[in-house]
Length: 516
View 1 (cartoon, rainbow, N blue to C red):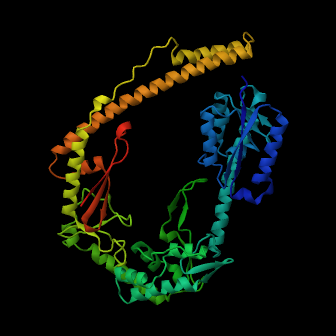
View 2: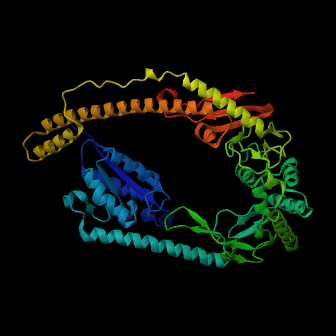
View 3: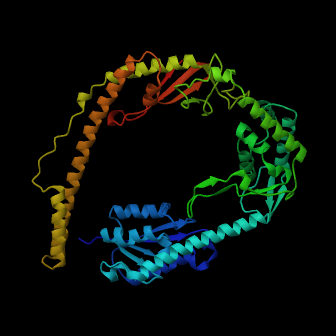
């Protein structure tokens, strides 16, 4: 029996490489296809894996991960790349795969431009030439990253725009910032209401009533001519970010974040003292005197709140066991817990939208905890009623076959016999297929038996947990964390509880209970 020879074409293009035509995806594809045609291998199937816009300094790329997963499953026979840098620029990781992993899985690796074909080296790694190329690619990538970072920093110092997006209220025209009058009107209104000493809630309500789009809604509305449905519901964090943004007085700001590591995607915040600031860089939307007064007022308000020692929030701010798990069933936002004597959970997101279903939605914390506890007891009683004796271990029939490990040894000996021409190809393939079938059966039987044993173990744990839950007379943090995933609250004190599931085949779906 003849098996298809599977070739994996791997193509990668980073953002920097897009400037070079020789490294384009299409050119890489044509070069690899020509090499495959020259190989003249019958019964060949070809799979293509493309990572567009990904750094080669790490292997956190979707296409290369898909390729490596097929390698682990033994479904790839050969991998072809334009050059070693396309597969990876990190010397250690790239060398590990080429020198250790691929030979282990008997995979042929070809790098066209480097004239490297693992089939020519018969187990050798390619010698110092390949290792030196790994080192060159890694150092080139790091050096290029440093140069790009330095170039961006120099542009920022000169006041050039180095980001695709700009602050709400502005638009990019070439390399300059210009005022976007439609969005700028919203910004001016926010500062006007703030200088009039209106509260955050009052500002949010005014913006909602006047149907001022939020920054994200405005961006989507600008991109789509059909105009999707918008809510115009602002939140406190977005308001504060606008009120604290120096760019509205014409100051250019850059360097607020930086990459944590070369080739990585994670960023870290840079202290404000280290930001790049250029005054009078672009047209101002807000007068500096207005901006400074609001900053001073916000700072004073913060100091006053921090200086309180015996306020209401301190007396009644005990941690709730349901914290972080209570959501509005209508809009999906987390309910905010009030720090008052008569503690309640309320939907803060819709407080300015009187026409929304969840406007004014609230429920007393003591009532909610009582409902949750009663439903925990009810769900626990239902769990105890399940008869887990129906689950039994499968009795594995006894087959006259070797163990899994013995078959591995036998397969290696069989391959050695084939290499030494002691048996024919047909005999080798037939016997190997028998070993593979028996190995697969042993593995599946083991997994099935282990799964059934886990099912019984998990169900017993669930029933023990239910016994302990029935003994609890009040809601505890352990009960909530162990059994509850979410608590959804609807108008008229309707509560829906979504339970955490135990990993049991018969009961592994989350079950919801609704109460009035």
